Length: 136
Length: 130
Image: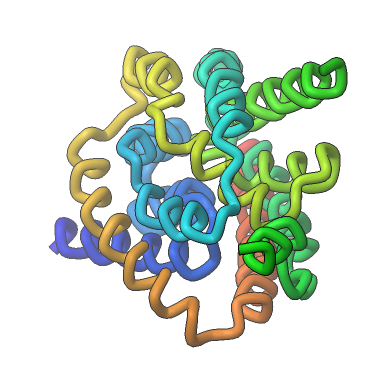
């Protein structure tokens, strides 16, 4: 029964990921904490593990086709992330569970504001792509 | 030339910031990197999102996962059970997104996340006093 619940939770989290173009962690961590009753640290560690495989490959292909990918910047970001993620984990692991839980809550509120800002209507077309298309 | 170096440094710092959030909160980091790329480095919204997806393809969180697992904070079984659902659900959601006004959905979701954040803080404070 629990196994079915976990499988279903994965599908629901995945749908939100594809639907909203957001990372899975922001959905997965609260789901594991509140639905599966996992410890905050355990949920975060498990979420990081889930995010290791290239889950976003399909989505990336869509952006690539539309010419909306800066490969150089992407790789530089990845390079910075390796070190940043390690530093972040070194801060989080020794923290007390309540502290981390509260901290995560504040982070969720901050992310909500960022998501809301992103919701403003997108510009009709990316100028450089449009220019390239008309030049061809 | 100089400007390119400045942008490159900015991009690496964006990655470091996204990475810290990732390791600290167990998330991907895109929610932090996309706004920084867009608002501070002048990427268009689409380009910022596409570029952030590139950064999320390599297993950049590997060292963080090892640090969590060393402390016993990874449930491998739950993780393995969640992966197929997230993958398949992601494809379904991507298809659904073309038929639903995304901006509206995102706003509803933002409100949900905000309320969830309040719930987290309240439950943390309660735990502290209980």
